[in-house]
Amino acid sequence: MKKAGVEPKDITKVVYSHFHLDHVGWTTVEQEEDNDVYEIELTFPNAIYYASKVEWVYWEDKTTDPVMSINLKTFKEPLEGKIYSLEDGEEIIPNLFAKFEFGHTPGLLNLVLKADGKTMWFMGDLVNSEVQFANPHWCYFSDNNEEKSIQKRLKIFDELCKPNTILANTNFLDEAFGYLKKEGEGRYKFERYTK
Ligand SMILES: [Zn+2]
Image (cartoon, rainbow, N blue to C red; front, side, top):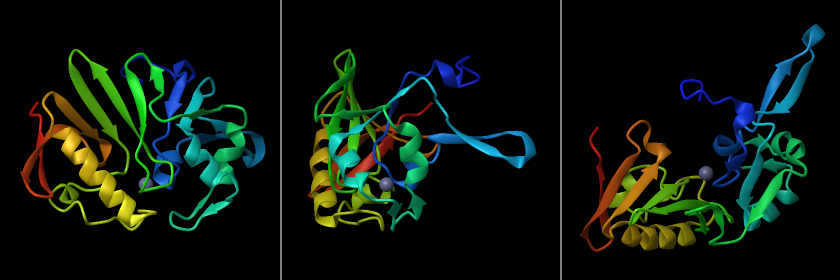
């Protein structure tokens, strides 16, 4: 962000794919005050925080997440009045849509960008590892509903094999962008875009 000349206060929209620890952990930062007193503040103080309506409702009455060992209060309380609950298919900014694909969590959403005749899918944890393209039936320990997460992977993988469709997944570190090829029944291969 610094390289791009963007300050945290400039950010006006944050979209959660879901509420697992590694996807909400940066919601707040600790600011050191005098005498070792720490103040918890939102990382992006001027943003509205978007999440699927279902995800917000699911975690609302929970104070901890047993799978990811997180105290949910630490991120929910500072967000009071700043959350926007998305409906399935809702357009967040022009050409960017929220698509619900429940399974990994009850309210997981992907982002779909449509522009210049192309479609780009930004994935949350629908896929945690590339090995799941060849084996969509393999589940991750944090998949809330394994059967549903498998169904969603197979459905979205077929979608990703369509022409002019780009896949982006930050679980694949610095080589996040590519496309998908079908290699047989229930088997897919991720091909990266070369730099
Ligand atoms: Zn997750």
